[in-house]
Length: 506
Image (tube, rainbow, N blue to C red; front, side, top):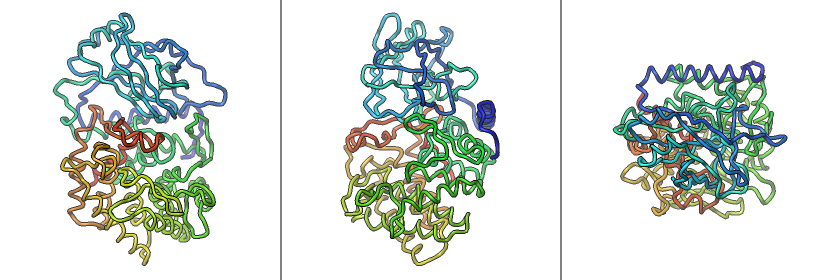
């Protein structure tokens, strides 16, 4: 991974990735969908000084002060016979409720108020276009205007033909045949998206999940390893690290939170001499207390979260082996043990708590997924010890508790014990990934594998025609209310979970 981080070479890496992933898709299955890329007008934008768009991809802007932007298509494209989904992908991180109004551009017929609340960086949103409105949409185009929100919304756009996002992230209509329902066609169509730039995510836990999935898939698919290395090269360049942070600022060689350590678990397993591994180690050591427990915060304000089971303990266990530093394995163990002790109570697993014992987010599916994945992934890399035996037992007991909450269709509710919070796919996929991984490593019996397979079968109906997983609760920026109200979106990071499930077939 020793190359220059020039714009030209970044483009070359992107083009190579797009070409290789496209070739894989053609070998695996017939495409049953099409991207009708929109022509965008009225979206010219100049970045404020100091701001940065991921990979310098082209972008557009919609603001409360503007009249909106127009999206249009060729009239000849109206020959489509099936559904059409309008998509925009966020090029920024939204920390507020955001609603875009969509109307036909000439007659002004309202199609929908498009809810994009708390949009995450590199997150696609889709809107079903009613069949009766398709003729007008192709004849007039649509105008997309902000009706709720205070800050400019940036989205990826092909206004810079020399450096653009992948098609799945550009403004487009996704079309597919009427008889190609979400639960039909190839059940492995998610691979098209995972093995492409359409799975690139913001640096941190989201990108780490994608890479972790690619790493698992690469054990049986050379193409997956090629894509993984190409994606890693887009972030780790010239023995450095360059990424767009959540404030749209270009960030170099910096780690901001404990949740950003996960990518280094994959980097260590693919490039064990990369100097940034030492940076990750130093960050972890600086966030450990006297007992070796790692957490964000200081003093009495430290928060213990299940995320760190996966984003810290797992990477540290890998780094302990890679760098021959057994003391890092002890940090991984102590970080896990603190969470086992504090966050698992009775039939519940809490996503976070203070070191003083206050607990929050009881039985939140995605929080439980971090817990289970962290335990099992760390176990796979730790040397045998009495502590490892304790952690193994903790995982097995936790798995029994979690399986009891699985619903007949294979999914879990967003909060297990609250059916009113609705079924949720990211937590389901993460839990099933942990169960699948545990079975592969001989930590659980066949009933746990069966639970993972049941979850996988239940998730198939949530796949889009082009392979994204729908039905995920938004990134946790809006507190309990956002997680409990049933709002669901696409989160591309979940593709990494699905790759783990695929391993049950090997």
